[in-house]
Image (cartoon, rainbow, N blue to C red; front, top):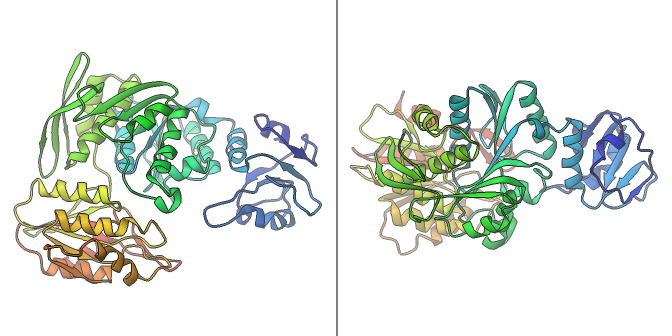
Length: 480
């Protein structure tokens, strides 16, 4: 493919190379660069691609795209925004796969993984068509699973995954869209058939700075969506609606003005049952995932399905057949008279939701074990401590993914939010020891929540990713 073909949608500010030059591939990571590649220098979250331009040329890059002309003599093209250009040339390299498949994007602080998983299931069962998924815990092409490293991969990987989906017969692709991905232009140039907003609560303020900036980042999805499904019970919904360029369909539980309203909610220990009311339809929905948050997740799925033009009766029949997601309100079999839930809750709002979900059906205590990640938004740590103490009967504060921070220092930040609480708690820094301790001290009827790790099967300590699967730790503690 020539540079001219790759750059057909790109504004070039300066160039020292013929656009007839043949290119062997597109790359933004010199570790993967092959001779003849076009190297796009982008500034990442932890590293700056501009620092590797010399290495890229030494490895045989045919040309470099950058935002400032290099001092050294080489073949380069200067553009205004290299991140956006990476997205555009990646789409061109894979022959614009998003134009051949219906892409649905889901954004919000909590619920993205469950919503995308349920929506993929509903689409496949309702239409008989194969669907792909790009998400936090896994990428999928139909039933085939592929490893996932980021909630939303870099733009080249997104286009590559979409191209694979198209080649393998997928008609739909459901994607988690993070605020980082939107700000860093990983989904730039994609037109979404439907954009879904779940909710917004404190998270990633180390990156965005303020909740307003965080909300504005999320809202960028709806400027790229033909249709938008918005949870108007959320206080930030209007920001999303203001950014929407296409039709807006609203859903809610509390706001009866919504296009789809959840009513007559019944919460059980293993499921939810409720009515969904929309013009001309009253649907009775039963989904085998516990918690009030499931009601909102299901409403978002039904809203997206309606915007996709799926048959509502078929959607209603498909939902009970869809399973929950690993690490999201996941019940771990114990063979004992207490219950263990593994949940990814790592924000104050998500922690409150999973504790309250457990509270709705518990006969004993709600016991919450959690920590906070290192090298991430430290302002939420005392808030999570306060939430855990407020809604739990007993709390164990432990380590999560400390990364390059000292676990003890993270725990000190959490404990600030627990000052003055009447809720009993223990501090056990080692997470394995903490899980063993709470299982050995469990009482009949307890619900034990292991929060924060969810689907993850590792702990990040320093720069090292160590194997750590809570299901295995629980089994060892139970002697299974």
